[in-house]
Image 1: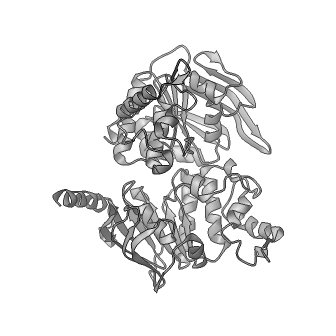
Image 2 (image 1 turned 30 degrees about the vertical axis):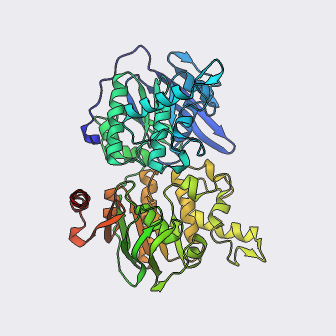
Image 3 (image 1 turned 30 degrees about the horizontal axis):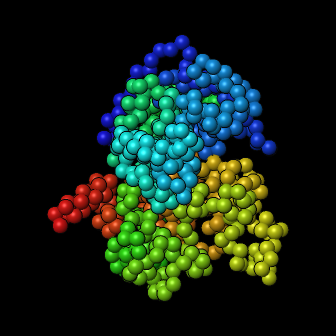
Length: 517
């Protein structure tokens, strides 16, 4: 089932909505994150929060989830006034969040994470069997391909997302908060989630849904509330509002073209991969070429091996066999430090875990990949003044909002975190760029800025590789497109052959060949 198969559920009439926020304001030191926001969510309704990164969406759902209290304003849930709500109390009354940044404990199993803080016991003894049985029942009901006894740190991001959703639905949920829930899921898993959402709405569960994907909003939403700069702009009926109206309300300006026109001018071969297989078996006998002056795309479903391929090229994923050459020179050593020094940059999909030191300031995060250069240090001692003088203009160019390079990266929105990652590309001389899901978790306005950044790199002669699960994105950006399926190259599409239909056909043809074999 796809998002197009979901129909809206009629919202039941109640005397008072399930959730009512009035004039909610939240101040942090030097930042007004929410400014008098009103929001109500009805039982059985899916209410989308829509806005640019930094608009206040994350702050608002954190207030609702009890992560921190509002500075002012009123908060009613189930007809009762809420004050000094904690995350534990929020879950106890039926408010269950699934955040974009996961809250799982990596060293624990899936079932241990599900029951963390709400363990079952009998006569003071943990009821391990009862918890395991309930975990299996819940995962079975959700239809997720998830093993309850697997350690979380052994799971890929898609399966961690499933564990987060299962954890949120374990209790008696009245209000479910979903923050970009499909970013790491396959089509089949997304379809299963949408079926689950339809059932929850029928059961009277209110849902707050944060997404930048118009297709999801169009298919699922009953109402949409637009936030901009921490303010409530407008709440609209999803059935009557157009995509253009939503984007204009979100950004305060019209965005006529999402994907830029890129002048590809293919030059020398920058990356050449021959018969490459990774030690984990997720990449199998791949041949791949990326050239300077063009974008080489890699498309495929979650788990197809596309991310592992670029990680292997950069030196993160160990290689079992095969070879990698940069600018015609065969490499005998692959590791991130060496790759950086050879002019290669890698931008991971999971920025919070792999890409950024969230507790450290923007300045340090941008410069950390260039501290071996003399302009940043002398005799092993970092030149702080020089570092600030170099990083400040870089982040001004990338339109960091607010432009404070001493702010902790963990305080930033998804779009601004991606800008910090991009800043590293400008902190040293690089000419090969590997982007893994460059627009995941960022809004339309931030996407446009990222795409323009990639366009500038290519038109300056860089070799750019873009890995994406979003077909429209990778089709629009790439000059040549590799399609991966189950760790292998299923097709190489160029020119007029580079169409969505041909990409999908490559999946199905490869599936048929595998079954026949």
